[in-house]
Length: 174
Image (cartoon, rainbow, N blue to C red; front, top):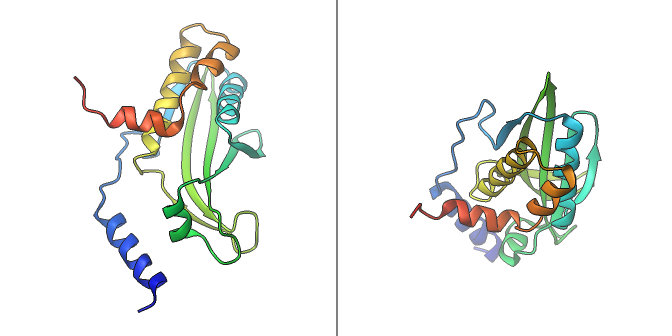
């Protein structure tokens, strides 16, 4: 059995044994409703992720797509291809402005061969790292609803990575 097949089988076995995060949201994914205009919420979201070294890949009235190369060697070995040895972390956020509120839903993916005809996405919206995205959304909500400016919320939210937020969210309450 070649090592790539063995590695793939081992990865699937490990991933299947992990319990995903279950969100009690309409989308079943990281989500929040914020009492603020969509323009402000999008500006904070994009500004924060840009400060965390994500690149803006798509921007429309309703959707933002941000990507960042994954620097985890194991993930790159397991999920990359001969065409492109680096995989990307992608966060897609949808913004729905309903009256004075903005509903933000997110989808997380690991992207192989990004931007090519061979692009493939693995949904990780219920992975442990998704806790970090949920924590970021909650922080944006608290800041904007607490009366902070867009700049203040962006500056504060940019101080911790998604991974650091996820780790903090997984620690038991003391």
